[in-house]
Amino acid sequence: MSIETLPILFSDVVNAIQSCDNHYAVEAQHRLNSLTKPIGSLGQLEEIAAQLYSIFSGAIPRPLHRAVYVFAADHGVTSEGVSAYPREVTAQMVLNFVSGGAAINVLARAHQAALSVVDVGVDADFEEAKGMIRAKVRRGSRNMRLEAAMSEEEMFAALQVGVSVARAAHGRRETLVAVGEMGIGNTTAASAIAAMLTHQSVDALTGNGTGLDTSGRARKQQVIVETLQHHFGTNKSPDALEVLRCVGGLEIAAMTGFILGAASLHIAVICDGFISTAAAAVAQAVAPAVQDYLFAGHCSEEPGHRPLLQLIGISPILNLGMRLGEGTGAVLAMPLIESAACLMTEMATFQSAGVSEAKQA
Image 1 (spheres, rainbow, N blue to C red):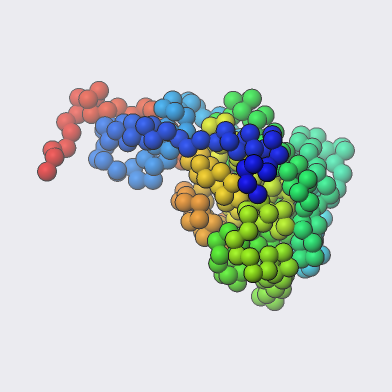
Image 2: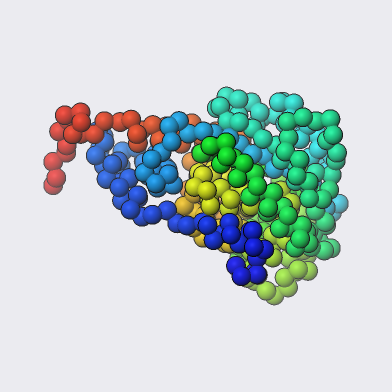
């Protein structure tokens, strides 16, 4: 889909995303080189600091106002036996999130990140559950092996959910947001998206998800191969939004919209694992300048994650052998990003500290 064919509200968001001004990158590097340390000695922290400086046009907010958003939806493809867990676990985990008992709750509390759970497509009713954003587009996506996961209208509705959540985050002055998800079957959707966007084999990109054995993984791979053949045939480079519509999930679409919306508002975004990075890859395909606003919290054990990070052009901050999702890896990276901001804004320069600089060779 070209930008001209997108719905007006969504195209406005995409058009508002601009690359960070290179002037700030140059200014940031000059500042980092003037700090009381050997040049480059803080490694990746310096890269993070420079990116923050550019995102916030030379004025990094202190402290960074942190939040994490967990987007939840069910997937029709679970009827094909692609997950070791039943579909009902999505709703059960959403209730666990809102009651405060999941890993992401623990980490969000530990690292002072406000947690929001967004129901964009869970196949359950949550009338009595408090503390979630209710934005259900439909009760789960369709079985992508047999038909498109979403209609165009449903996809854009889910994208708009994400945009609206990003605008609300901006209204609360949140400046550093993590993107997480919950949806049984969503590694299947992410693997299908990754295969189409990276042009790598389904076998190389598809892992065990939530604990599949060898035969289960083989079944999952076969479902993805049949799905891609059904929707795209010999078309190896379909439009990214068409890929999302056919094989994505409602939560992946919402995360895509959230990332686009956040970038349009100069909010720093931390991708979590494989699924949220698949959403980020779609977002970057729609608006390449999105890359300037993205951090990779960690590198997941899911085999498709690293190729997606390479496609986007971002490096993981952590590598802890994790594959949980929920936004956990992204929230764990927050203290390091905050540390980079502190170093950038609080360290003395050679001149201010009266320290002699290194002699030039």
